[in-house]
Amino acid sequence: MVIVDDEDIIREGLRDFVDWSVMGIRITGEAGNGREALQKIRELKPDILLTDVVMPGMNGLELIQVIREEAHPVEIVVLSAFENFQYIKSALKYDAVDYLVKPFNQIELEQVMDKVVLQVKRDKLIAEFIPEQTLAAGGRTREGRISQEIVKLIERRYMEKLSIQDIANEICLSINHMASVFKKETGDTVVDYLTKVRMMHAKRMLRDPSYKIYEIADGTGYADANYFAKVFKKYSGLSPKEYRDQWS
Image (cartoon, rainbow, N blue to C red; front, top):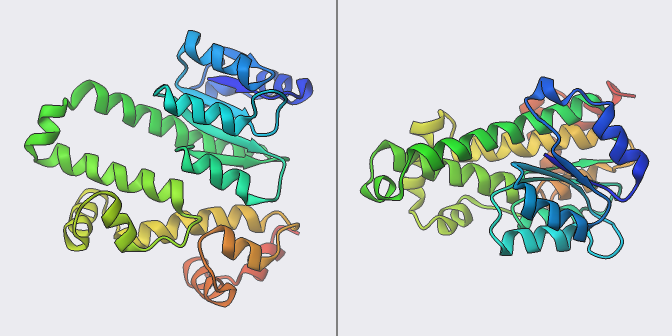
């Protein structure tokens, strides 16, 4: 993994005071701005990039855009000190896996990085064991790839007003075919998985008292805060306020 942050104290703290080996991660490089980070990516070819958003010169979003244009196979986690989710939405559109809002705690860091490490392992298995001709020929390997694409799409765009039809259109399948494949491969329906991802992020945001409930609803793809509260209650057994009160 390469760590990028223009604040030395944050970059050095992440490097020196987190036991990355427990998560199966090794720090191979660090950078203080986007241009330096891009050079590190080109030279070191890391599996994971942990990058700040606001930096001098080339910022984090510009860095991510260039990385995707150059097709570097790196999984990206974004660090942001901003409450404005436009920064994070922009990063996720470039296929960032997840984000961390500063200040974050060890549990939040581990949850995000565990997911990223799992994604790296999936990518490597696919690259090694599933040649393109096998995918084209169909069978379970193709179904697994379809399901992975659905998962990545949901994790990238859960903040949007994303419908099941939108997902089906994106991967060029009918809703029924998509639903059947995903259920067979994962055990979840597409709707259930989308809700699960949204609720996971809602819980994280609720632990930060600076977010209002309607902001959390909007930040997890719900235009109606009352409907969001109803879904959250059904999913967790607690109202958003009750869940937040547990952390106050």
